[in-house]
Length: 557
Image (cartoon, rainbow, N blue to C red; front, side):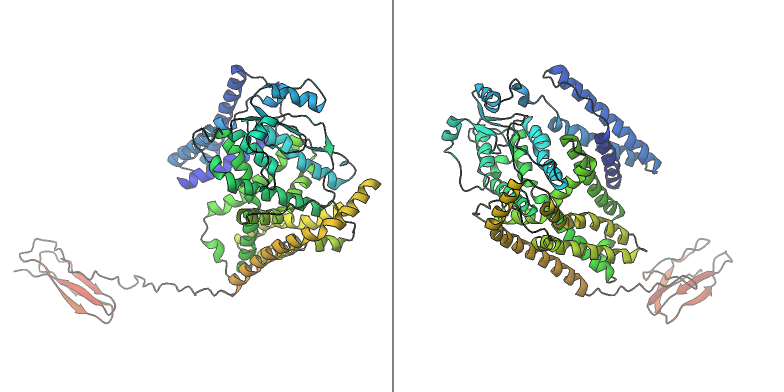
């Protein structure tokens, strides 16, 4: 039954993801009962269609009626239970669309006495001249085009600092900024919501800043964001746990989920790094003739992992494209910009949980070097992991006669390309054409701040590479015990008789009970014993091996 439910999930996930590629009709988003009812009815219809498709596919695969019902019920239950969480109520961000000036647009929102902060998107300029900057721009835009409006639906918007306003009374009431957190703006928004204030995301851009102009600068910025997010999780995790609203904590369930998921999602990069280490160790184990790492995994589990990885990739790219308006090529490039910073984010997620205090890592904007080996040297940890990944793919492909070989190579391809994208993006940023004033800014800021950032990244990279090396060597030099097959005795000449006393039935009633005697036998023997009953059929008694066997005899008066 569990296998049927897992198979139903594997079937339903791609079908549900296919809806992302259907053309969307733009409806005017209105509040009211009819709008909510229409969305609910469409969600129920979609659930029914998905359940029918899953039932048809399971029946074609030969599933039993009981397993088919269990699989369909699991899909329907999962779909219905998530409806309250994923409902799309009208965004409160559309309440002030009358003006095009920042203060004239955002200040009227404070007419609501419980609005504590208003946040508009952070936008950027000078990104159209180079391919790398286009993809970097879309990777930034995703948060304010998809994530922030979604959080705003449940009054869980985050205050991002730039292009935002805070009510002075609310700030003073909470004691101002908390300097212990490296992302003090996001931490303040959580405290405001917990105190009973509301936040508002206004979905229109008024200010356009400058993105980090080198890939190394981007890694420094991602490090700071991740570290601050983990600091927020470590300090306020009790406030994010499910529970009732109280005097000290006014957060609703939607607000708690928004901040808990937003902080915990940083650990996705750490899990991806651990998964890469696991795959590299498996490739080393497979290449040396072991292969023990995958033999205990069921076919369903082995098939579920690549399906989930592939669906995660497709969904992220599809949402990025639909949410930001990027082309398919730019959406894929923006996604790999995310993946190429996974190593520094993994380091920050660990240090943010353990370190009590962190220095503010100022963002260095660019490097003045354009040679490709400078990009490799600046991202040597990611380059080393990518090299290990390509070696692991080659090692896995040496076992094409086994299912685990091509499967392992396919699973290694995605994280390996993510690591390899780091030096590629670094080189692309160094070669990108910039206006003269931006080139000057790039050179001066890189010279001022590059050393501190490079030392931190090198430490985290060394730890990650050392972990991969230890795991691979442990599997390479760990001996595997020889497997001995059992010594089975075939029933060619005889079969073992039970070692317990037994009664030998007679074809006719016997006057005396059957007795048994135990005698050791050195070899298998067959001896006919005539029965004294009226039946003329002889009784055959067998004994096997040197163990005591029971020989039955019968006597008649």
